[in-house]
Amino acid sequence: MPSKQELIKQVAAEINWSQADVKRAIEDYGDVSTKEEVMACCLHYAGPELKKRNYQIGAMKTVNARQKSTIESLVQQLTSVQDFYQNELVPNLRATINAQADRIVELLQNVSSAIGGDK
Image (cartoon, rainbow, N blue to C red; front, side):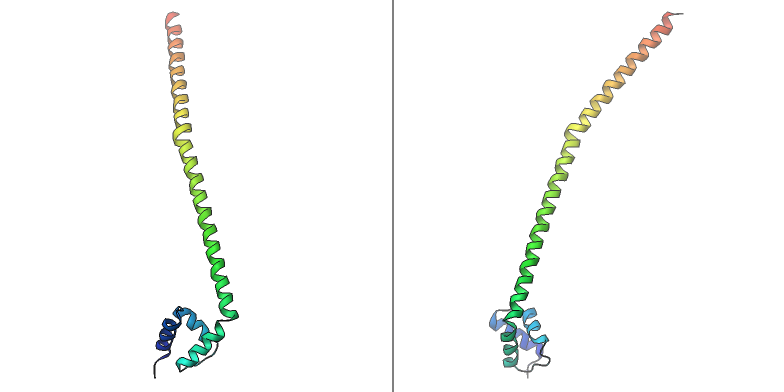
């Protein structure tokens, strides 16, 4: 007599179901010992239970697609912000700082020449 796991494998291969779905089909019926009993459980499961399971799988795929879309959008936003800082803000700040440094040097030279000229 084949084991329960062997029965599950045989029936799953025969009806093109996953072994997990066959296991779900026989969970509520307790002990099954023949291939016919497993098939009967699958037939019963194939009604509302399988429909419910397929809806759950569909819902999970929808959530997955939404999450993937959200992640791609966030990555795009972060890349755009990074590009802005790298290509526009930092060079502008650097130019402003250099211009201010030049102005300070110029003012200091004027002050030192004014102080040196008074002597």
